[in-house]
Length: 206
Ligand SMILES: [Fe+2]
Image (tube, helix red, strand yellow):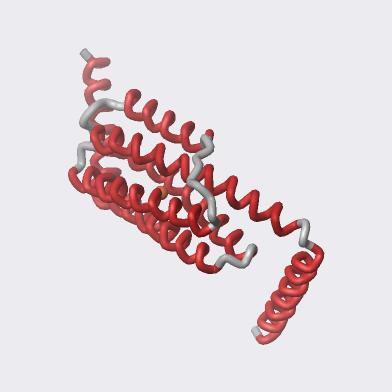
């Protein structure tokens, strides 16, 4: 145990040294990283604004009241997240700018397909909606986690704190969606599946 702890401290020290080295080397690295950070901000800014437009489609298709409410709440959160990103742009003395996020467009397109390929008003469709929403959340968790880390690397703790606020909301939403699925929707969807199988068997027997 003690050995591991020493190893960890040693590792940390090496990491610190490496960071120092790169920052002293990096008058040229610094601006590059800031530029990269800003580009990534534009990506998630586009993604959030896109979600404000597209999440209502998920809410409308959801049958479970619990799910509808969770999505509604997340739409409101998403609007705040857009405002937070605008705040970050201004902290960087930049105008908010959006750059198309192909990944988010793909995820919402996929959600649309899931809705159209499952039967309206079924628990199976709700399962599909939850899964699609969780894929969105996981993209955002990765994006905000990475951005918060980058913000600290470029010495902007103030910006990292704001990004982590959003990160926490995305994680909470992901947990909530899992709970909704586990509570009853997955069970209902399994029952629907059984009923359908029975019907098919009956039809085959007739
Ligand atoms: Fe978000």
